[in-house]
Image (cartoon, rainbow, N blue to C red; front, side, top):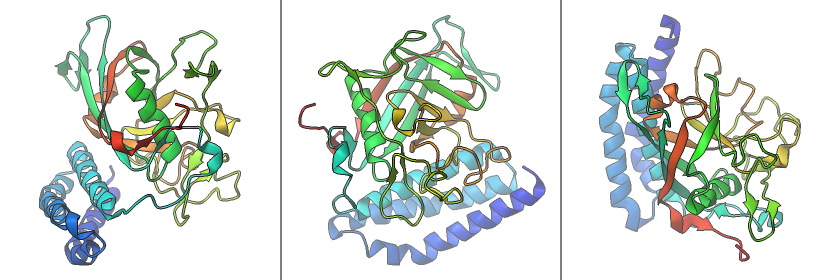
Length: 309
């Protein structure tokens, strides 16, 4: 980052520290009594991270800054979830035939290299890569529900990485070069597709079936932007918004090239979660590497399946 950008990062971090310090008590008032102690503990943990984060900014250590930012955001997300009583809006009934995630979930994924060659991350060798992801159903209930349902079914186990170009890492194609490009429901024998689902800042619920640009709001920012290394989003056909099925990608965020809110992805693709542990290990994932397992480790109680599922 250039010096000017580090100065802005420093200002933003100190401003965030002040908000947490000065407004924690007011925020805690929105937490149900039975969750107040856990929320207070989360705020204490967040406040304890800021001195190290400020030191990392002063040292211009981008990797440490990104790691600690991700930890803080994850803990803030935990507090937000504690504030929730029920689900905040109704998903359109036309999508009741699809799995929905009414809350958050955590997925752990292991990637391996069939050749036996290790992953080389800045000179450090790894036999395999383990990443942890938080899946956000509050802001993308249909997309997140689809992903978590497929994880639970074991769909992604042993699927290959089909794209890795320094911009995204993509998987979820069960048929390689064959005609099937998504999940075929064994009950209906039909390809299951999901709508494009984008939650714009200031809205009370997601917009379905169209990009924000086609909705006349191309400049609108999203609640969940492409803003960190390992951002999770669903792939789809370029000109068919409701064509996502099982293929997803990790976005390899570079702030100078793809600034959040000013790139070609926000508002056009659905972000449904973030990689919260070991995102930096994704940098050496290549085409042909394999997801040996994807595991749902928390949040299964938030997964709502259609009655026919």
